[in-house]
Length: 77
Image (cartoon, rainbow, N blue to C red):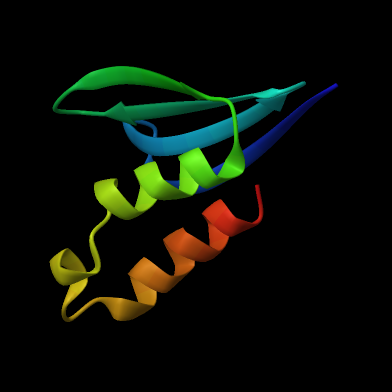
């Protein structure tokens, strides 16, 4: 069974989704600058470490609510 989670979606070119496929967690990041990137994780802690590295809190100084929403979406995976 595949379970799909949407982390964020700004438009059809800037979005991030996560699919849980058995023991694999597959993250797809689509951006208008970089195209599509796919990352595969074997555990939720590995996914959360990547998320914390990808979205450091210091980059969201005046947008803490946005950072909290993104991290909450990752925690629901």
